[in-house]
Image (cartoon, rainbow, N blue to C red; front, side, top):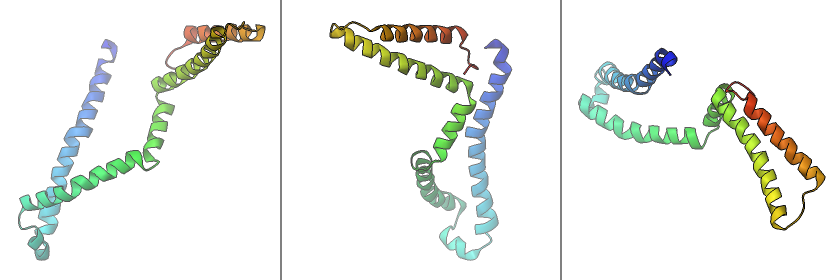
Length: 152
């Protein structure tokens, strides 16, 4: 962690900036600019928004629920988030490693349960099953020896 400290600090700075500071600053800026450059210059709109604080209140009543709904649809109802998640898994070596480990685990769990079922019925394992089990064990051992974050 010590050798990566500057990069970690840079990452945390960018997260704090983009997620919190820039978001809040952009919201305040948008509200201020739209009110003082648009609403204040158009008398008919001033009937709906007589003061800046009423404008902020009314826009917040409309915008916050609307943005929550848009965010919900982004994550739950559109293919956009799935595409983002796919890109993260494809490009992040840690996610890729987890996926590959899971594939190995599922295969070994499946074969283990097959053997447990046979043994619980007092059945003997065939030569092919023993060979498959031995091959699985060698495959897992080889995977564990060579695995790194970047290995496929």
